[in-house]
Picture 1 (tube, one colour):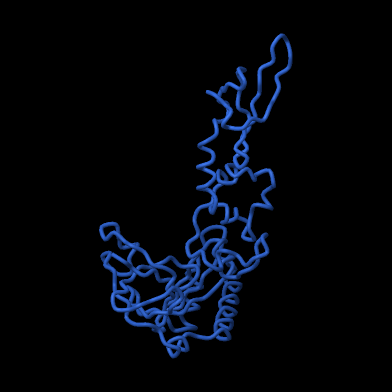
Picture 2: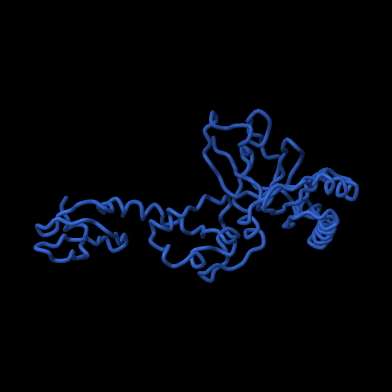
Length: 275
């Protein structure tokens, strides 16, 4: 089943909807019905979905059913969402309430439901926060359902935007709709750990998302090299692999010395090595 991927704000997950009646492009605004009301969302992609794999958590409606898109959004629809001035005002009020209750949390963004039924405040914090009293104050002030959603520090960078080490706008703010897991193993395989954590980390303080871009290529190249500690034969001599140079497709081999001589390390092309 071909579905359209819709996101309601940059820090929320992607929801699936049936695009049956509409011709849509990435970036289009659409009106959809969800379990909690009518929402205005942005088309961020398309996907072929196997129906049996859809769960309630994946889908945008109860029971895992993929609901249809109601219609394309109009300019008038966008005008119904509070503008930046109102958004800033509401964020400032929420910040004051956070200070009032002495909560250790950083407010990041606010999202308004299209039908006006709910306001969601996004925040980051080191641990769990008891914001029950805060929600009561916000509910009285806005007279709407209030939801506080804790997001990650990478989501904050995606919202605020900035420039990476490459000099370009952050990938997460431009085209990464979902933030994948970036591990230290990726940095090790791509042999850039020696550069230091500051040079391979983004402004969010986490490992840069672009480490995932060439991971597959490095994995394929690494398969062509003997593993570290493997014993290999080079020009008739037995040695042990002590280092790999993935892009150069060479390895460093420690050759055992004979007659009391010290071991020597030589760099050899992978194609010239024998098991």
